[in-house]
Length: 237
Image (cartoon, rainbow, N blue to C red):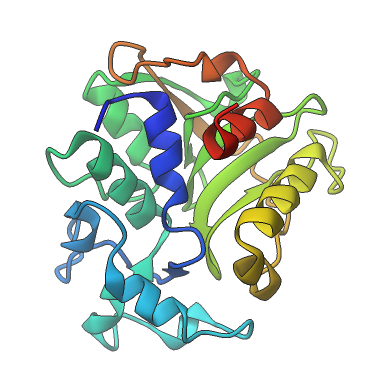
């Protein structure tokens, strides 16, 4: 696979609609790093087999890997998802780690730069956002004109596109509207079971941004607003 920003974003879409949120999913059974699924190309058949049996009442707490190690093979948690994504692009090693460490890990490997939350002024497609005081990690699909951000992550109940409120806290944001538009169009069954909801992520996450010589931004996605990014990765426009 060509190492481009577009391929990162397109690959990130693959688990939507067929991968549930499982706490510990993507980790190994020793709980020390990437498991076999997060070091495998493509979506694990086990994820889809499990997901298709679930209902809108799905509760990840019913599948605690600390009680049964087999559960970690049934889906992905937030860091398992980002780790799986990174392995599918670079195909060289495991990338699963604590969510707060992933952005800094990538910067340490000289794949890009990290910026602390208090210094962030904008969000671009492909930014990986690691929580500073929260245990979560997510992928940016770009920013809207109202300041809200379209996001892609594994969060209960599963992998999905969502959005943030505006910086002033308005939940009926452009990002939420875009997330609803694309989830209902391309993943209607998933979206009906697990509707889009806003995630208040602005101001709480460190931002990792790729160097162009690591992931080539062939279509200048970093300089597109979120609606143009989504058109590009879904419709090739």
